Amino acid sequence: VQLQASGGGLVQAGGSLRLSCAASGRTFSNYPVGWFRQAPGKEREFVATDTWSGSSTYYADSVKGRFTISRDNAKNTVYLRMNSLKPEDTAVYYCAARNSRYSSASVHAYEYAYWGQGTQVTVSS
Image: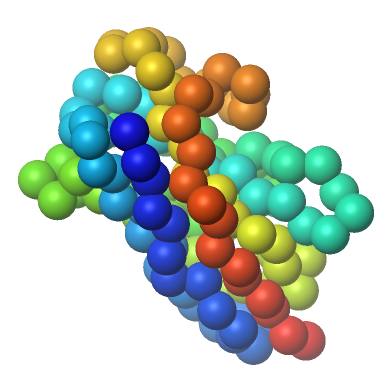
């Protein structure tokens, strides 16, 4: 399974970006997918995830109300829409998929088996 994250870039505070995570080698259907981020000098932290059905979503408090995770199973792609970006959102963003079908959503990075390469998001003030 390979995950390809894209869509990062440089944006001014208050702007928006949409990250994409495309999977190859396996379908995203029936597997929870999460987004994490890591800023320089900081540990990787949870951002957002959904359930395997996509019916429920979970967000870190720091992004709640600004970020939205969604999926298009027909395209085998998961998205992270980021609005009202802040300088503190600057980080490398990673998408990740769990290994077990129908497993529960998780905020813990260690429960994800497959990771994309990361895409840089930089928010200027």
